[in-house]
Length: 148
Image 1 (tube, helix red, strand yellow):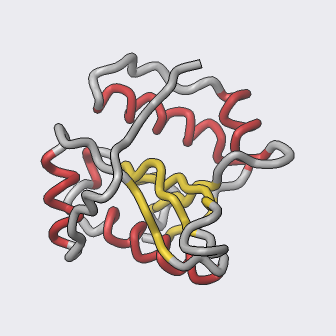
Image 2: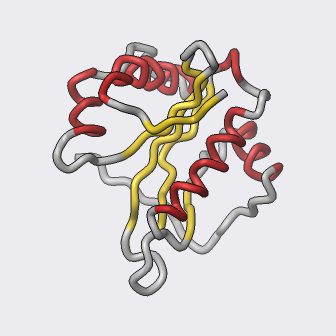
């Protein structure tokens, strides 16, 4: 397995993964809008970055999408993991752990002081995964969302 930064050639694969993510959470399994994915990841400026986990044959096992947030502590920057997803056929094979390790490396290269993310309380497999990595829930913040 290898983990690479996504390129514009990966837009279709990322679109398919977005549909699988929606289905995982009970939504419409239709792939994401390819033009919207292309603009978000490769527009000027890009809204986010994606790491893809692939098999030796190029088959995509999963993804991690992230962005930088500022300020973190003082004037520091943090790396924010928005989505970590592994296709069902590749789960429990170390893909998610490898993506998390690569995210830590990306954060260091980008000069970030920390890696942050949220997890849905109604997603016990994700919560168990993060706990298995030695992560503890940070209860100091409350999450809000405003739809536009």
